[in-house]
Image 1 (tube, helix red, strand yellow):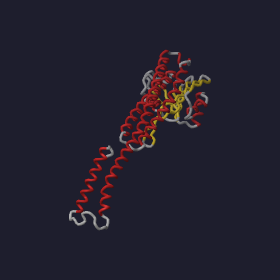
Image 2 (cartoon, one colour):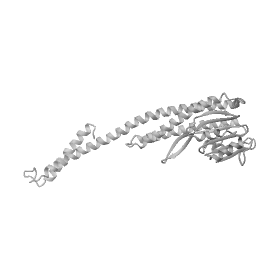
Image 3 (cartoon, one colour):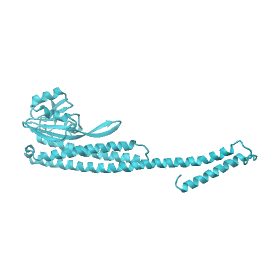
Image 4 (cartoon, one colour):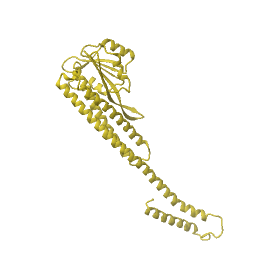
Length: 313
């Protein structure tokens, strides 16, 4: 899908247009081969640049060819999987041409949607270098937002784990830990790309742009630190709660074993008195049943007291 936008005045209001014009933004999401060929011919961008973001394993990098600057960065995504929110990252290609900006991604992202919905202040499509930096800053901000969500989600799961004897919560924590690994890897890859961008002449024209890029690098480093801290905490938590689940199961098994011992006492006594033999105690006593019942009850109470003192009941 190809969408074309342009800010027509200094107010910063974004408008959708039909044709590619100087100063416009071409947003390409999950494109077909025909879409890429069309944009490549109209704008004069190498087809390889447009296809670069369609590979999920594409790493963050910078490439320059014929006055076209390609910046590939990993951006965070949230997805629903088995009624659970999961986190992952996908490559986003940002192409700076002589007259326009092109973005290519496999999926529709909230990061770019914020620009389309005019949620970003001081955003102009004709300020191409500034637009790239604003996208990068938005990416770093969303990483921080999703990392905080992962932290809150892990705390909620930990509360359930205190009394749990199942693996469901541990599997959820494992999914969050995988997300943190993906985020950490993507952020470190983005950091290298951002450091390289400091040397680009395009971003050296305006001091404000360089300041924004430095802010982006700081935000990215903060996200890396947060991802590492949360990953270490989560890893230790999973090890601890695996032992907790095992311990909870042992406590239940210990209780069941104690109950089995107590219930075995009256079973033995009643089985003995139920044998079809002569000379059974209390066989001639009219209250023999109740006497036998009382003996069994007393022995059960004694067993309960003994097991309780030993911490087994």
